[in-house]
Amino acid sequence: MPDVAGPTAPLGYYWGDDSYGVARGPDVMATRLAAGGPALERLRLSGSSTSAAEIAERVATATMFGGGTLVVIAEPGPLVVNKPLAARLAAVFDAVADGNGLVFLDLVDGTARRPASLEALRNAVAAAGGEVREFKAPTREGMARWISDRAAERGIRITAPAAALLAERVGANVRERDVDRRRQGELAVSELEKLALYRLDGQIGPEDVKALVADAVPGSMWAFLDAVGMRRAGEAAELADRLDDVPGPVLVVHLHRRLRELIQIADLLAAGTPAATLVRALKLNPYRAEMLANQARTWTLPELDAALAGLLELDATLKGHDGGGELRRASTVTLWIAERVRKPGTR
Image 1 (cartoon, rainbow, N blue to C red):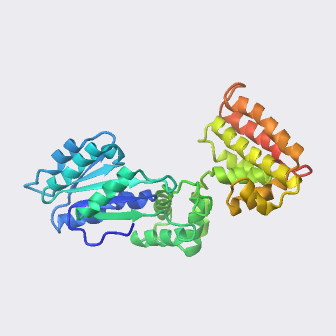
Image 2 (cartoon, rainbow, N blue to C red):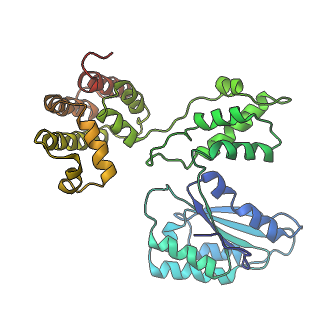
Image 3 (cartoon, rainbow, N blue to C red):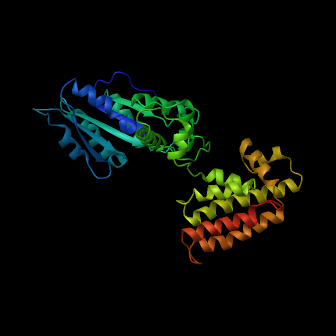
């Protein structure tokens, strides 16, 4: 949705998958409402722990002395889960007193479909003359430029190579679509400010980033499964470590599904089925069919059967039947990869 230019009401809806941008969305409105006078007091409420009545109480009274109040509602979904609740919230829009403001912050993950109720709230804010703005997480190609811009805003000097390395360290170079990029901007700015303290009177270079910024590349289930499928054992083990927030049984379910797909495709290829026919036979899109076929060719059917059988022992351990624990999980997954995924004759 394009930005709504020239808001006429003290309302705002700031959304997107960039937590840094979403959190700072209300800044311009706060400045506009202050109109050169005292700064507005900000009151942050959660949509899960407030109500339309409480919000109305906060915004309906004009401040006689000092600045007004900007009420910020984070994650407003619970306030609009049904039509009666949404109607009560919309009625609050007309109750905002002069000098006060009301804004909503909606942080999305970039992959899930948005509830219709939140889209309706966003449209209602726009229809009432409020500001609606989307903040997208910087892309892989744009993060270095984004970091340089944030540095310039703060009077921090950083070389282009250092900005590019910092972008890489916070995970911007990961291409997989299932990666959660919501906090990358916040992390980049936090590391940038830390680097600025280290180089108070100088310019931040790549060597500073290498010395102070830990690699925070996010985990990706897709990347892990693709590494397993292509039998890149070292990469698969490294990616598995980054998926420590994924429950063990869930990890096994994803592995089981991928191995079953590869066995099915390997069977079809062994029977002489053309790769192009896989699209129709398995109801896959062409890209995914080609990708899975390439992975299946790196295995023999006995190797795939052995890998699938090995998941039984892996599943038992990850469910805690054999002790459990983070160290136990990491070692067991690594052992399964080494025994079942690694190509024979490789190290």
